[in-house]
Length: 206
Length: 220
Picture 1: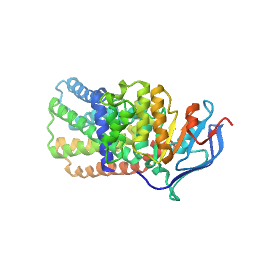
Picture 2: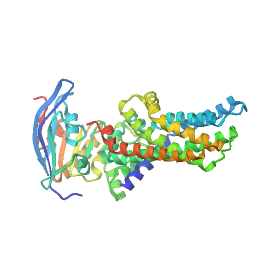
Picture 3: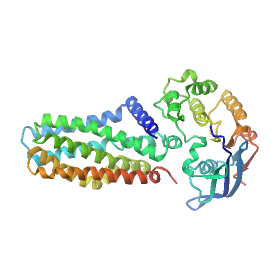
Picture 4: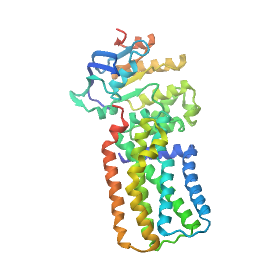
């Protein structure tokens, strides 16, 4: 979609809630082909850091800087480069998977691509059911399709394997292996298999 | 941007058509309140001012029962992050505003027809009456859309919505009541210029809401 050279730089990021320090002095620099994990115990701020990187939350101090061919991207435009999913990202229960994907696809909507992803994630036969009838694993598969379908330059996945069975995990790992060399991949996780996918990362416990 | 606003409106209508309870409750509220007033009146003739006050009280509470729903639903069903990931705050605001204007104009049509029929009111200046209902409804929808967004983010539901809406809508109700009264009894037609106040009020509220919506919607 975008052939520009995208980079993300995290600069001395700190987050506090009330007077509780969650993390501080987080620094890293990521470019195309980098895959990065964020791990740490429950409550250490993995999801918060991922949301800060996605521009969904603001850090208490420090900066996240996105650049495209060395020019800075405004935070309102991050979503044009980003595929994000996590437990808080919920497609509409009253819509079918096709309707949800049509709603979030960039124009022009590529129905063949939708079908391809639904088949890959074994949801094609459920495409006309309302999402409210999906199991939690099926919902997770649909969330992952939403993150991937617009072919974003940056892929941010929060607990991507939660609720997935072994078949779902295999599908996800196969796809991430395919795409990670052409994107920036950031995963917030405690799963050793997810961590092994990545070339570098941070542990928020330290 | 236009296509994306249309996509969002289409999505909201699709969801509301499949989960009919919220919209149906709004329409039922409007219909039942109008019928209750006509039964309670029991054929006693009201003055034009009383007709206007009752008519706009029904419209005000109909708005309170239904217009915050479009934002509260996004929060209650935990879809707001999903929506925000794919749509800009401006696209979200404009689509919800258009949805609320269409919904409230539909509610107003039902209330108006029932009210005129059951209370046997025939405005002298029918065109002014219709214009007042349309301009007043747009003003109410404009105010309630942005307040609905605030209330949904505050997580306080519809009771707070009514409390904070009333003082802001007071000038609208005041003007609309006076114009409706004029259109029913046919005196003081020079007041028709107040229609401009209703339209200007909507314009100001929509402009301020458009500019400030991203600070209300995004938790930054």
